[in-house]
Structure formats: C-alpha cells, structure tokens
Amino acid sequence: MDKKIVFSGVQPSGALTIGNYIGAIKRWATLQDEYNCYYCVVDQHAITVPQKAKDLRKNTLDILALLMACGIDHEKSTLFIQSHVPEHSELAWVLNTITYMGQLNRMTQFKDKSKRSEENLNSALFTYPVLMAADILLYKTNLVPVGEDQKQHLELARDLAERFNNRYSDTFMVPEPLIGEFGARIMSLQDPNSKMSKSDSDENGYILLLDDKNTIRRKIKRAVTDSIGEVSYNDDQPGIKNLLNIYSSFSGETIETIVEKYEGRGYGDFKKDLEEIVVDGLSPIQEKFNALRSDKAYLEEIYRKGSEKASDEARKMLRKVYKKVGFIPR
Ligand code: TYM
Image (cartoon, rainbow, N blue to C red; front, side, top):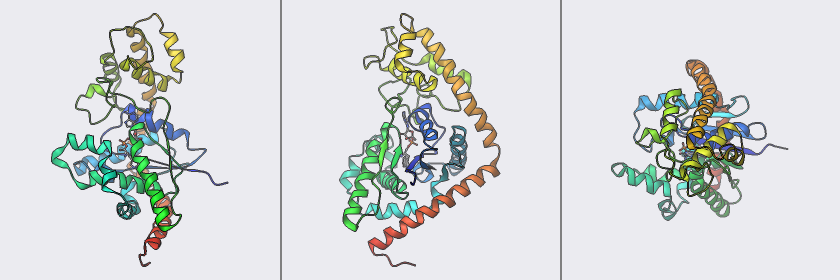
C-alpha cells in the first residue's frame, strides 16, 4: 500500500525558535519512516513582509541546514525550497479564484500582522493562506504537522479542496491537521499569554535554536513565572505551564512526572534543571548545523534533488487542475 503523504513548511524569516521546533519541526522527523514526507522552506511566504535579498538568501540556507540538523533526512523526505517549484504560485492563482474575500478577512494571523505593520499592507499578506493551501494541495497531502497557530489556515486549505472538488470533480485530497496535544502553542517567556515568535521585539521572549548556552540560560532565568511558587500545570500559572511544556518536550518526561519531581521545591531548582535540559537538547543540533552550513555545495545538491522530486508531483497535479478549469495544454 502506498504511504500516506505529509506536507509542512517553515518560513525562512530569521532563525527558528524552540516554539517552531517543539510545535512542528521536532515532530516532522518522527514521521519520516511511516509517511512520504515533503518539507519545504517557504521563501515565497517570507516576502509578504519586507526582506533584504541578502538576508533572505542566507536565512533560506540556514533553515535548510537547520531542518537537516533537527533530523530531517533528505534520503527519506523530499526537502526543498518553495520558489524552486513554480507550480506552488501557479496553483495559488487558480485557488484565488475560488477563495472568498470574507474568508481571508477572518484570518486571525492576517489581522494580527496587519495591525503590526500598517505601512505594509500588501495584497500578498492577505492572500498568503491561499498560497499555503496550494503548497499542501499540490501533493495530495493527507496530513499537515503544524503548531496551533496554523489551524485556521489549514481549515481554509480543506475548504478550498472541497470547493474545487465540488465545482470541477474530484481532484484534491482534503488534508487533516496534525497538531500535538502538548507544545502546539509555546508561549513567550516574557508574556505567557502571547505566542513565542521570532518577530517579538523583546528577545528575552524567545529562545532560538542557535542561541549560545549562556543566552539560553539567561533567557530561562528571566522567564516570567508567578508568586504562587509551586510547579503545577494549570491555566492560572501560564508561565510555569509553558515552561513545563518546554521541559517535557526536551526531556521526554510526562508533565505528571515532572510536576511530582518538583513537589515542595521552588522555581529556582526547576529553572536550573530546565536550563541544562534545553542546552543539552540544542547543542547536538547546533553542532550538526555548523558542520552542514559550511558545506554550501552539499546543501545545493540537496535542494536541487529535492525540488526535482517535488516538481515531478507538482507538475502532474497542476496539469490536472489546468485541464479541469479549461486551459489549453501547451
Ligand atoms: P512558521 O514559519 O511561522 O512556523 C513554522 C511552524 O512552527 C509552528 N510554530 C509554533 N508552534 C508552537 N508554538 C509556537 N510558538 C510556534 N511558532 C511557530 C507553526 O505552527 C508552524 O507549523 N504559514 C506557515 C508556513 C507554511 C506552511 C505551509 C505550513 C507555508 N505553507 C504548508 C504547513 C503547510 C508559517 O508561517 O509557519
């Protein structure tokens, strides 16, 4: 039987946070044996906010190397760069024609982003979820492993697949989100009511996968907690709850075990151990990253091969779509 298909993407807009890692990328690696996985560095999504060309080029290769350092194996999975497979934006155009403005208006991420950068309200920021739907639908994707913040975008992709299938006949697979029970929404270390994000203006709010040891320790030390003083997993202690999710993800221990371990002990001990767990968890990733990133020719070979494989599938699907909408074949 054919393996089910997994697709996911990450933007090359700066370094990745442990939120990206815990919510998505760490889980990508675990799916590679059971599924046919496509993992994509979505550079076309990244330009919906202003980017310097030089930085975008650097970040794209950084992310590619970082994904490999996090365990994505290019022999098992198709690892590629979005702009190398033009079918993504070509399908997005077709999907735009069946997307309602009202649906895009309701996207919370668009609303948040547009509040933050009112001077750059470009139309690509608005239609971004349509490109994301195209990414997913091109590959007959069954499952999309993402963090909680992408759920609404996934619903749009499902909706567009169904609408197209109803209008033109069965074409797309309707994808399911794969969202973890814990860690699907890692929060800012400075404000546990908002999502950890690399675009946070306060760098103490996030830990980057490439932060050095002392920076990691400092950020955890400074993480906001509460005055209750008890390591416990509940919504009245959002700071500690968040740190518990991070602890559990890096140590592999259940929340219950960790809470028991720190019973009757203060936050000091808990944070000190967490510092070491995160440092130890990230250092092998950083070592692998440094080795991979210095070999540009190797990275080039990998993204070339990846886009060739992805293109084969993408081309077939786009041809089908073009035929259904009535375009004359070349
Ligand atoms: P991006 O680049 O913002 O984030 C990549 C992945 O990391 C997850 N994530 C988090 N998970 C838990 N806690 C957090 N604080 C946190 N921050 C980020 C995101 O949910 C995501 O899974 N639009 C997407 C990229 C994309 C995509 C796709 C994803 C483009 N096309 C097709 C899946 C399928 C994005 O901006 O993710």
